[in-house]
Image (cartoon, rainbow, N blue to C red):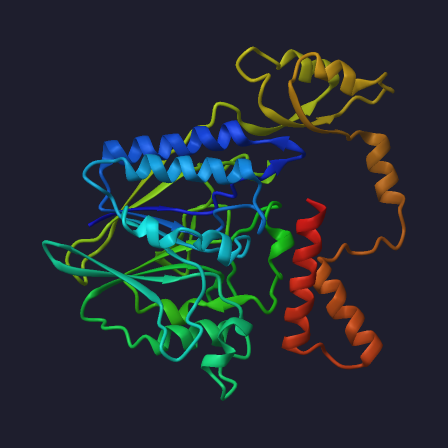
Length: 388
């Protein structure tokens, strides 16, 4: 059985206030084209469909067109979608019953009552059943009613308890679709600037992969760079489009996985996705940076670092004559380096949740509880969403 694994579409996201509608539409059309050419048996979308919990009308239109194009493929390809931390459960769930008639299945919340379980879609091939378990982004608060004994006190225990509750038949092939920050012991996945604001580094939102090792493949979302975590079959597909300069060296694309008979090695492939405008950085003197501009790359989104020692007159104005989409212009030379070296008592810049953790300890002379830290993480995320 051949799987297409993608995630973190972040439809509606802006890059330094540049609207990415055209690029997102372009990349989603490429995914549809690849689905028609390669004929996967199922398409997995592992969360963060939208960039904000309240998407714009334009974002809805982009995703609606994408789903319509997928639904038009004949014969039909099942599409399995889960909610990520950026998605609103109710908004993503809208029209889900209608979508199921077109073989598009959406899961937006983990089980909320004793009668509910993870949404499970079973497909078949020549080797038998493949069970797809859909685990949307899960916070401890979402599932505390299921575990009144206090089992789900943090992210790790909450996800573990939800999965153990399923009593999965390991004699069959099982695939998990999840959107969480997974770690392997103390090893964390490689992160990018575009996602650091939503991840507590070394904090309460991490989930160890021990609780998901029972699956034959784990299709993850949440991290923007394609990578494995701990095991080759536990993978983040990464975003299909570059959303920060820190992602400039990423090879964006579709993760393709082929499952054959139970207990046999999986086969992996990568189908590249190429946007018509790249995201990249350029370093050099003003003259060198201008000389590097060409008709092919002048429309890229560029972060420019100038190394001129002499003072420059309105360098950004000069650069804008050669580059259409400048994200930022920085100056880095001997003078700026000297100033940085002479700055005394430079304070470490902390992520908001880490600063709160330190502040709480100083004021109360005790560490913050997991409940209080989770509440503050939610507040910080809401503030960041408003600012963007």
